[in-house]
Amino acid sequence: MHRRIPNIAAIVLALTCCAPLAGAQAKKKPLPKPPVKSAAPPVKGTAQLPGDNGKIDQAYTMGIEQQLNFTLRSAEYTLGRLIVGTTSYAPSKAQKLLLLNFTVQNPNKADTTCRFDTFKLMAVDSQDVNHEGVGEVVKQNESQQALDIALKPGQKVEVQSAILLPAEASAPKLMVQHRSGGKVLRYDLHGLIKLLPAPFADPSDKSGIKAREDVPGNPDVFYPLESFDLKLLSATLTSEKLGENAPGDGKQYLVATLTLRNGTRSKQNYRFDTLHARLLTPDGEKEEHPQNVLLKTSRNEDADSTLEFGESYTCRLVVEVSKEIKRAKLALWQGESHAYLFDIGDSK
Image (cartoon, rainbow, N blue to C red):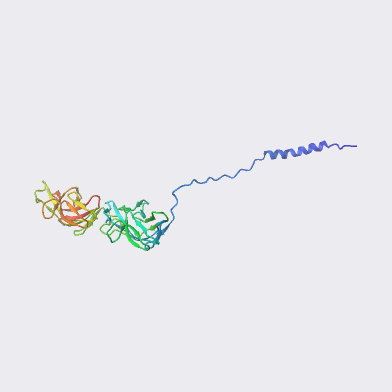
């Protein structure tokens, strides 16, 4: 029996041919993995709250709970005050008031409460600065009491609120939200706000938005201060004694007869330091007179008493000024209010 001997040369040749292929497979690099994109970190508070673009005289249902219909009727700039019960909101000399008139109606089948904090009001001025409302709401054309009412189904009420703004600022945007949350109403108020009338508007601002710090006044017209309304009746210069008081050397008295009217719903005291005075002479000099004499009109006695809401009192404000003054402008104001300028003396 013959056994087949393997062909050694053939085996060696086969191994020699396969060796380079095996080496190439061993040295082959794996394909690179695609780069992993890192997720951006979450940032809170950047998303705008859902809402609607509001329109004047259009009703919107607001809130998640105890929903109410809100309708903005009008908006206006004013140097007057908002009276809410015994509280009064008056602009300082660096401010004006954005007065908002709106309607609230109950769309529900049950009584629904509406009060001072039911709606949050906020104006965004032309510099993107936020200004929150005064936090009070008052019923229009009634007793000016703070709104706190359970509205019957379908009942509607006309109300007012306000936002204090810088004297020079506009309010192109108004935002309204219900206290229970939900959508935000965003009003574009460009061209929709009633502008300041003369003489309160600064004539240097053609837009009619900026309020004057010192407002030109006319006799026999009431002007709003912090808590009083002021009306100048007359103003004279005299060197005569007033009772036991006589002007000092080189001095004379400026006597302004005026009427004070309580413009709030709380008692208001008047006395010598209620009004501040400043004299502006024709050559530009300013004399500050923070405290003066307040006299009764009929007697040279101090005027010092209290006025109830709506009550008026006529008295004399006595200011000691230089005897050289023949004519000037008299500025009168209360606290931090806007001042009102009146011509006194010789008009020539």
